Image: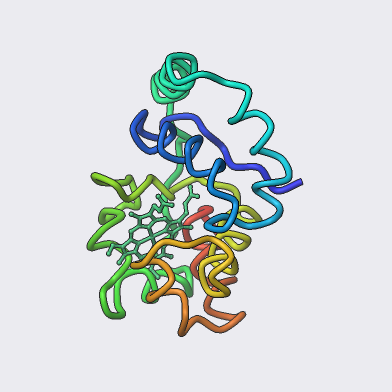
Length: 145
Ligand code: HEC
């Protein structure tokens, strides 16, 4: 199973993701399969409390590898990933932390954005041009490889 690491993500992002699983046409079948029943069975106050619990945990400690082939993909492009996700992929505003996320999860999300199985305008736009090699490289960079 390709589940994300939740520690250290922002509470607002975690809460918005939990609510997103209730909109099945905007999320991948894999995400809906696992998360719809959990989201539907959790009320708003409990979602917020869970989001704050995970946001309060330490984010994965990781140093991005500056010689990774995925670094230039992360830093270049229109618009560059780092303009939203931060120079060290630490996350900023609506754009979540990516540094230290599991590589398989990152790859699955980039495929889901590319194929519009997970709907989010900027990510669908940016993901559309990615090749398999690009996805492997940028996910590897963010996972610290
Ligand atoms: C214009 C701003 C913007 C740019 C540029 C951008 N992203 Fe994102 N990205 C976002 C936002 C906002 C989200 C949260 C989407 C949501 O709420 O579903 C996101 C989500 C993601 C996710 C899912 C993370 C998770 O925890 O599920 C991945 C992976 C990702 N972006 C990778 C990238 C990569 C790699 C690039 C560059 C190729 C990139 N993003 C460029 C704004 C951006």
